[in-house]
Length: 157
Image (cartoon, rainbow, N blue to C red; front, side, top):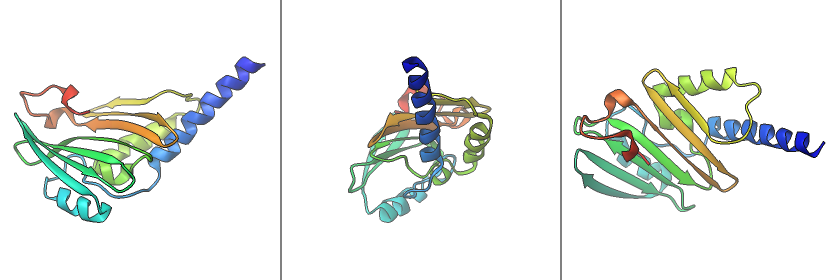
């Protein structure tokens, strides 16, 4: 009986995590969109933006007052090719993923018996991973075709 209860708890956790991922929260730049949206994100979040230049890409890191961190990875062509997050809440995935949010919605509609553990989605030209627990969420998403040729997907963390 206890074993069955544990499975139910994991199943409930998985559903709660999926709901949190799809819920609205502060806004960010969208995957596949131009770099110009980063400064607006900093203003919306009232967060600090730290910019770094790396070989083959630029990284914009936004930290808000709650300690949430969003990293936006931008190609030399000026497109956001990857996004990662960590913090006490799951960010607004609709805003964060832009047009790629539809893939997450489709996935959520097909998952009836999903249980705990990280949410991993690899579909078409889109990779998404998210997991965590109350007050400690993290994840990343990227578009393989937008990844600069000299970089591996592991750069998006």
